[in-house]
Picture 1 (spheres, one colour):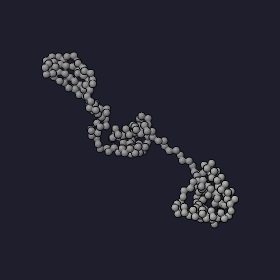
Picture 2 (tube, one colour):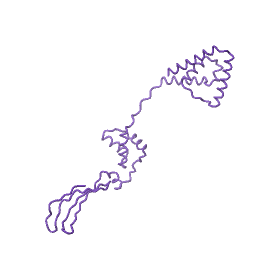
Picture 3 (tube, one colour):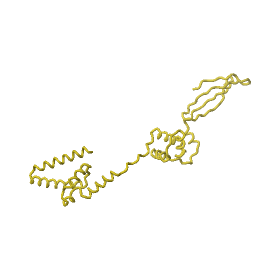
Picture 4 (tube, one colour):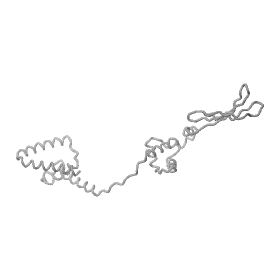
Length: 226
């Protein structure tokens, strides 16, 4: 910023020195042209935006202008005083304290997973589960994350078995046991199996044993699981 201000002041001083070598008639003509250009620019953009270097140069040049001409410039004395008050306020303004650190993406993904897999869990329950595994997150932060991803709060009325199965389908297994009697040899086969709830894939655990009609059970016969 200091380099930009020094450059702007150097250009202004050199332009001022160049004016000393010109005649008064050429200066008067240039002043009339500049006044007309300023009038045209004011009609197109009545409130132009200036950088801080422009403000510094205009504030310095205004001090050496006659008081009668200061009020009709693009920068009025009231504007100069307002700039000065802003500089004083910026000097004594205390730095803003740093806010809370952002929540890591891994923790956000974990919060969303807990909320989606457990639709009946509220913000306090999710906060407690996170605290058990070593993550301390405020309830308001969890609520903001769920709202940002448009996850509705738990209704508190849906306690059906279907909701439970949908939430824990990936970890549920159903087991069953049945027997079959062979039509020719009358041999009874016992079969145990499990089925995955999510994929409906059946796994054969084995056949514990066989028994002939009217006789003792034979030795167990097992089959490999699929």
